[in-house]
Amino acid sequence: MPHKEGSRLFNPRPLSYCSVLRRPLLLRHPMACQLGSEVLVLLLLLLMLVLTCRTGAGGLDVNQFLRGEVFEVSHPATTTVRPVGEANGSRISLPRTGEEEWKEEILRLARRPEAVQWVKGIRRRIHENPELAYEEVETGRLIMEELDEMEVAYRFPFAKSGIVATIGTGGAPVVALRADMDALPIQEAVEWKFKSKRPGKMHACGHDAHVAMLLGAAKILKAREHHLKGTVKLLFQPAEEAGNGAKRMIEDGALKDVEAIFAVHVSHEYPTSVIGSKAGPLLAGCGFFKAEIKSTLGSSSNPRHSVDPILAASAAIISLQNIVSREASPLDSQVVTVATVTGRNNLNMVPNSIILGGTFRAFLNASFHKLRQRIEEVIVMQSSVYRCSASVDFFENERFYPPMVNDNKMYEHVKNTAISLLGSKSYRVVHPVMGAEDFSFYSEIVPAAFFYIGIRNETLGSIHTGHSPYFMIDEDALPVGAAVHASIAERYLAEAV
Ligand SMILES: *[C@@H]1O[C@H](CO)[C@@H](O)[C@H](O)[C@H]1NC(C)=O
Ligand SMILES: *[C@@H]1O[C@H](CO)[C@@H](O)[C@H](O)[C@H]1NC(C)=O
Ligand SMILES: *[C@@H]1O[C@H](CO)[C@@H](O)[C@H](O)[C@H]1NC(C)=O
Ligand SMILES: [Zn+2]
Ligand SMILES: [Zn+2]
Image (cartoon, rainbow, N blue to C red):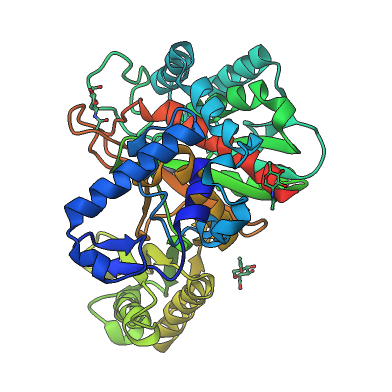
């Protein structure tokens, strides 16, 4: 693995930092910086060139080699620096281990022209026939046909329309990869050959691409089944957008024996095929609430003889604003939004009930559940101040997603695998966002990591956010996503032993 060789040999610590090059220097002496960046770069290039050629580092060229792997000091694999002497005195005599062959082979499998056409074709067929939560019948049929074709075993159904396929030894360890399958109730506004054929339904979140990438991974993993040191479970999950599909998959046993799980989501924020993720909180917990504040019906002309749920609702709405501003730490991002208030449409009567509702978000599990508790308390208690009663529904069986917190070890595994496979220029650490994903249900049960793959291409116009009727993707990301998925699973099993 050139990556590891490079790090062992070229990272004597401590590194000095060069303000000209803006990166750690390989030479210890700070004077080296004053040599001027051009000379240094030239010297380094020459050194790499010689070494790369002499170690016969597979298909990697100097640019790939230089693409930061050598400089990547925060990378855990590279921080296990061995003294140069241990390499038996010679940099070029390090044996080429079996470890480095996986990436070339996986990339080769993913990039074969027929594999690229096939994976794009799958995505297009699903894109044309979008199906909403728990209605993924045709999508499921397509998946099962492809799995049959590959001779990959699977079980169906999980969570009504979900499928779980297995590849590998059938024994432990078991690692899982997940793709969601459902579309959105949105009318596609993109005019292209494979536009949605179902009015008012669209794959506007890229779940069609997720299915295609996971089938792509299945094909690669099946071809490399003899290399797998355990079992890979592929979860094709329904109902991510609504219906807590992940929760039902778990209830139906999809995580049985699974010790780690990974999933990818396409992102218009990153260029095509760039992989991004972060350690710790990545996506917010997301909940919804709907409260009914009730009183006895009265006449607005005689308020003394009635209780007024409008006043109670108003007080509750004002008090809800205090939860984040007065009770939460400013360093712990949270949101409480009242998004709707409805009552009776009569100017002469105090209504007997008011409905108010909205959403709340938080990155920390404790904060998320605290918000839920405080929203209920504030609405019920403020209502009682105004002699009304209130009940709050949190839709916990439909849309209640805990925060997505990446497990640190699993995150490192995603990062290391992506960088090994694609180079460090194709990896970035991303910011957390207030969006949500029901993948977090899995992460509550087993160590998990969620990551993005870029699909942004200005030329194609794939620049629109998910859930936009203009959403589209650069399909060139699909084979890369398949390769990353397959690598994450295979390397997990190889390293778990
Ligand atoms: C160095 O490598 C050679 C050939 O692979 C081997 O014979 C020798 O024992 C090694 N020396 C050490 C110190 O490991
Ligand atoms: C999040 O908090 C809830 C309620 O306190 C708890 O049931 C759940 O297990 C917690 N999840 C994690 C991952 O800690
Ligand atoms: C964007 O897509 C066009 C057309 O497929 C392609 O030629 C170009 O290389 C892509 N750009 C990037 C940055 O991937
Ligand atoms: Zn979505
Ligand atoms: Zn999505």
